[in-house]
Length: 134
Picture (cartoon, one colour):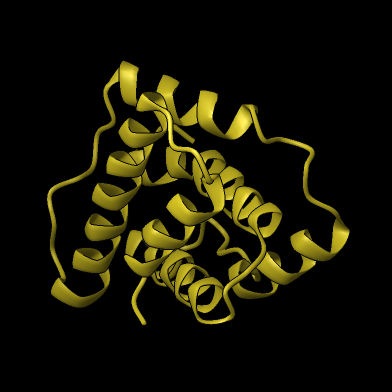
């Protein structure tokens, strides 16, 4: 299993895929590939979403916000936390490793759709930190 398997799982969870969903799935795949390069390949050019990509991500997660429950949140946060502080060891590689671990584990357990939506909501919310906007 890899983090990219998450894209396949999200596609399946969507059921009927709209054009805007396809655009988001492409963005998600590119983001996961970037995180994998950060973790496994070392130095990588900083990621910069375009305004349209940020809006696309926000629309995708906003339309699903609130469909998850505390159990979904606890499951995802178990892999994401402890969230790195702003100390020196809290670098982009550590952040990427946490996100990839969560993505991979969610794929392995074939998480329910609502759990995936919460993970994507967290990814979207925390992505700004990778871009240096947080």
